[in-house]
Length: 135
Image 1 (cartoon, rainbow, N blue to C red):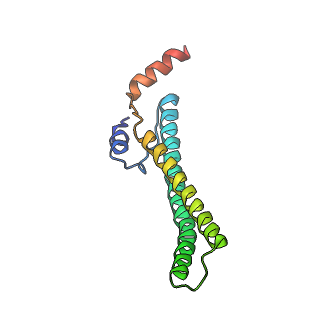
Image 2 (cartoon, rainbow, N blue to C red):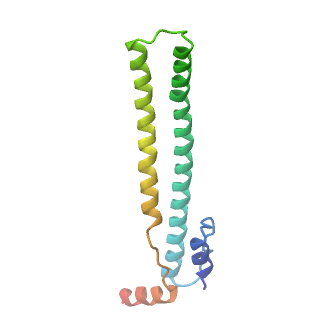
Image 3 (tube, one colour):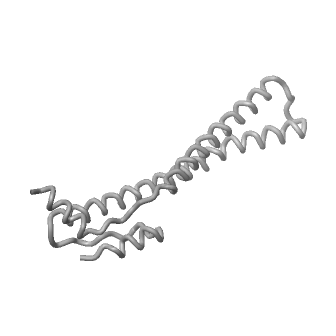
């Protein structure tokens, strides 16, 4: 059995590749199953990140449109500039700030994840360790 192609693809970010079915020791099959579950979890996290970016993009459009339309109307003297209009613009700016802050926290979390160092172990050695523990 050889798992090194998966190790190579993980480093090159081809996370869709899975270790195929393993025939042999139960521990090696479990290792392959665990590898597949971890890769599925990474795929799920990637999808959640894409969904979040799409959500944030959608949510940013509304406050930006309100700010743009309001300031243009004020500049064209279509509406009076008063405390109510200023408060409305401030509320939209606060919404934008909150969305940007959330995106920043996500970026920091992603950077921390990228810095993690994963280590590939020799499956033969893992099988030997598992066999010794089973005794």
